[in-house]
Image (cartoon, rainbow, N blue to C red):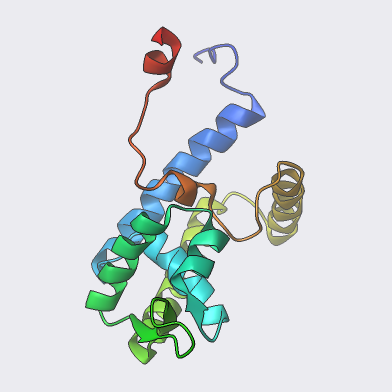
Length: 168
């Protein structure tokens, strides 16, 4: 049996390892729909809200508004989201999910359940519930918004490695 390098059995490492694996698998499962994880999150929010401005959505997601425009353009091209002029402010667009978008959201829901079952296969239902509660408690204490992936805030920003940051 191989020994585990020090620190590689820490909770932070395991969360990162599983989170990276889960994100990769989720993206792979979404690919046949021509969607990426950021699209799924946007559709989830728009499915919950009757209509929302692009500015409101960018604020909710804590992401750069110009990057959101590109994602909405992609969803609009696929016929999943529609922009509508705001009656009170012609400079502002309201976003709404289309019927095709609701169908895509239903497919994403099935993919999400499959993903959840695959990732948590080693746990029984009681353990899954307990894990979900503990992780939600940690996320809340860390100031993470429920249901909003913190990666949205990094979309559109150039990636910098830790080694580059350390040299500066």
